[in-house]
Structures are given as C-alpha cells and as structure tokens.
View 1 (cartoon, rainbow, N blue to C red):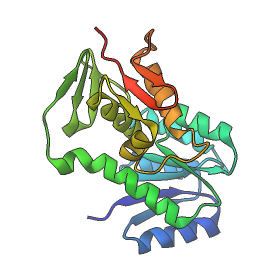
View 2: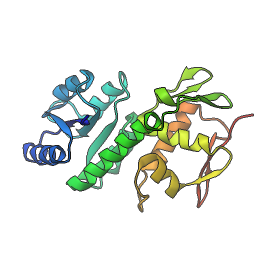
View 3: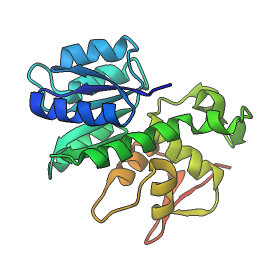
Length: 228
C-alpha cells in the first residue's frame, strides 16, 4: 500500500517538482496551494503525512499546524526558510515532527519522510501489543500512546518515539547521536537543535518536575529518571 503524502506549498514550480519526485519514489501525492485547502484535506483523512510550507498566501503554515494539532496527531514535516531558526522553534513548540529548509534537496526530503513513516509503523511491524510501565507512565505500543497516571499524553509522532526510547533505557544515559538515529531516523548534525526542542516539549508535557524526569547529561545525552 502506497504512503499518502499531502504537499501544502504555494510555489507552483516547487510543488510540481516535489510532487513529481515523490510520485516517482512510490508515494501517492495530494496537493494544496494554500493553508485552508491543506487543512481541509488533512482533516479529511486523505493522507498519512503532511509536508507543510510555513509561508502560505492565506493562513500561515504554523496556524495550519496549530489547528491540525487540536484534532489529530498526523505527522507533519515543515518546509522553512533556510536559517530562520525562529520559525523552526515555534514549529516544534506547536507540534511539528521535523523540518527541512528551503530550497530543499528532494532526496533529503524523501529520506526524512521515509524515516518518519518507518518510526510511525515500527511498533506494528514488530507485532508487540504488550504495555510497559515505568513508574507513573505506561507505554501502549499498539496504539502508540503513552499514559501519565492513566491520562494519555498529547504527543506528536516524534515526541512519542523520543520518549519511548528514553523509557526503554530508563536510568541509563542515551547518547544524543543514538537518540537522534533511533528516534528521528537520521544523524545528528552540528547546530541541529531538533532533538533539544523535542526534549523541551516533552519536559513541559510531563509537568516540568524538579529535578526533571528527563535529565541532561552534559556532553553525552539524556537520561530518563523514573520518579520514586
């Protein structure tokens, strides 16, 4: 079954280029030239993943993302202006799973999408439906949900992956390079703050405990501390 990608991009030339490349790589592509059309298609369950430009002619991609996150956990990759760190930070705060700067290399976009889709499908592929408890957190792999005191945490697909990796290694340090590869499916590059932003969001959603449940081990990575 082909993976369905919704491409929301107002630049017609770029949209056609990326659509053609995605189609040649085996994706089924739906297109939208503005935020409202993209939002309607995404909420209509016409896709498995959204590639969303931030700069759109009607409503911004960030506003589209905000409205999507109020109703769905659909994976979203942002297209951002190269060097615009503010948009990327806000995008992660709103709930983006990943980003790629424009002008983007189509091969890199394909690699990002494939990595994200593999992560979303991983638990089903390994065929486990056993829940796992870590103190007051419980992981339900078959539903890709993590519960805090029996209340489901509102996590993006990537936040789920990052947290479940940390939980699986609770009490031990997970190196940033390993966490990036295992949870995001790509190598850690210099000045890439993607992982740091996901960790920051997870700390907020876990309640900003003091000391934090997710501890930073300077120069190495992160460790999850199971509350006593």
